[in-house]
Image (cartoon, rainbow, N blue to C red; front, side, top):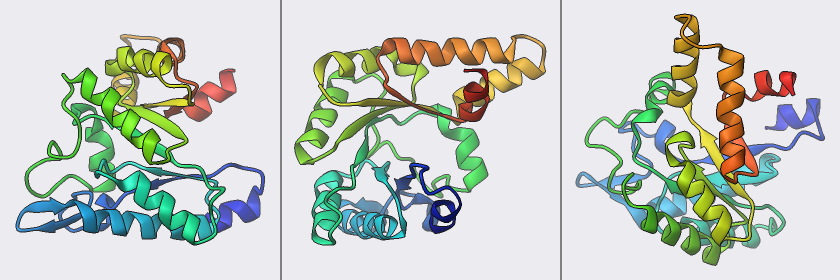
Length: 220
C-alpha cells in the first residue's frame, strides 16, 4: 500500500480485511476445538484494519462475516484517529461454489470443514437483508453482495431497501467461466464480459469489484 501511494498518490486503495490467507487452517479467524471463535477473530480483524489505515488504505473492507466485526473495526479505527476511513462491508457474502479459482490461487481453502457456519445460505434472501441492516447499524458506509451474478435479485433488493452505496463482487468463478468459455470458442469474451457487468449495474450495484476491471475500463 505504501508503495502504491508513493507511485500513484491519487489512486484510491481498498483493502480486504480478513484472516484466511494468514492462518494454517484457512478459516477466517481463530479456531478453538474445531470451531471459529468469533470474538477473538473480531479483535484480530480490528487490529488488521488499523494497520491498513496506517499504511495508507482509503477504505477497509472486512470480508470475514464474523458477527460484530463492523462495530469492532469502527471502534478501533476511531480510537486510532482514523474516523474518516470508510468501511465497505462484505455484508451479504454467501457460502458459494464460485470462489474456487481464487482459493486455489491464494492457497486459502479451509483445511477442514467449510465456511458455512459464518457465510450465508444461498437460499436465504431475508437473512441477507438482516445482515446488511445489522452492518449498517454497526457503522458500515458501503455494503456488498458477493458473488454477483447468482445474486442479482439480492443486489436489487438491497438497492431498493437501503440508501447507501451498494457494491457487488463478480468473483473468480464467474470470471473463470467466461474466460474458459471464450477460450473454447463458445462465447465472445468482450461481449459477454460487458453484458454481465451491465446486468450487475442494472440490478443496482453502484460499485463492481471484478477481475475484468482493467479490460472493461479499456473498452469503456
